[in-house]
Amino acid sequence: MARRAAAPPAIDRPDPDTAADLGARVLAWYDRDRRDLPWRARPGERPDPYAVWLSEIMLQQTTVAAVKPYYARFLDRWPTVEALAAAEDDAVMTAWAGLGYYARARNLLKCARAVTDHHGGRFPDTEEGLRVLPGVGAYTAAAIASICFGRHAVVVDGNVERVMARLFAVEEPLPAAKPILRAFADALTPIERAGDHAQAVMDLGATLCTPRSPACGLCPWRDACRGRRAGLAEHLPMKTPKAERPTRRAVMFWVQRRDGALLLRQRPATGLLGGMMELPSTPWEAVPMPDPARAVADAAPLPLDDWKALPGLVAHTFTHFHLELQVVMARVGANPRVRGIWVPLERLDEHALPTVMRKAIHHALTRGF
DNA sequence: GAGTCGTGGAG
DNA sequence: TCTCCAAGACT
Image (cartoon, rainbow, N blue to C red; front, side, top):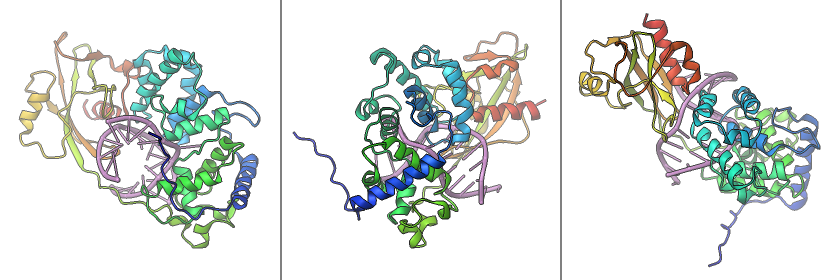
């Protein structure tokens, strides 16, 4: 059975001359104003696929400013994909701690090992070959293929979607507008220098065509921009409203051994904060606990009845819910039998503690003594 | 298609 | 304080 590409959406496609002119203008702007980023090769130099891949994974839904220090530490510690493939899981999770979206770190290791074990340590040089690697989706595959290997690939990220929505005044809200925005991006992508073109449009979105208060006066596309002409630019792209975030609550257990060590556990490998370390807690529930004392007794790592509640709560917001934690503490004997690991307070940095756990620890250290 | 999955900064 | 959002992937 012949496989057919999905029919391109009916759009008011720019004619070839217009598309070529727009492409030339944004490339000229990029050649003049390109940002100097650690993972970006200098003009004329071949980018290192490992460095570009690492940066692209870190940059998923994450700001450049947040990525920079992590990127530098990773590249310094694991300079090649083979070095990363040989790393311990815990070492990578610890190094990633604080950056968020921890499935990326798990997939990062899987991908490094796949490239090392099955591709001789070289990244595939096609979009299709890259696409099947763990953690590499449509955007990342297109970005690496075009930037590192000069392939003609259509790179669509949030910046590109915003810029296309404005340039062509697409009023259809996201995510329904995605096929239309992709079609416009496709129409503008040149055969040559597709990677530079993609980085140019993304830079444009990151520096001028920003979500709020776009700097239209400085934009190389200001004259052609239909959204600007219609006075709509700042309001595009439209988005379908998202559900509001519920608040989940839990009681978290600070258990300190006689020698001062703190009880930590590793979370399940998948799901929220998968594979990261945590303080034990009751389940995080959005509905009030019907019987708090019972819930605490059921979830407590040790059968104690003299938990001391700390004043105040720890608040943290995840992508789709708020979390409020009541911390209770207890001191136990020299060698209690408990599932988990005992970590001296001065060695907490050696463990993969996500930010919410660091907040809870900080709360206990400042309010608990 | 719609949920899940973190965090910190900006306004 | 609160909402939005950032070079998305996966189920």
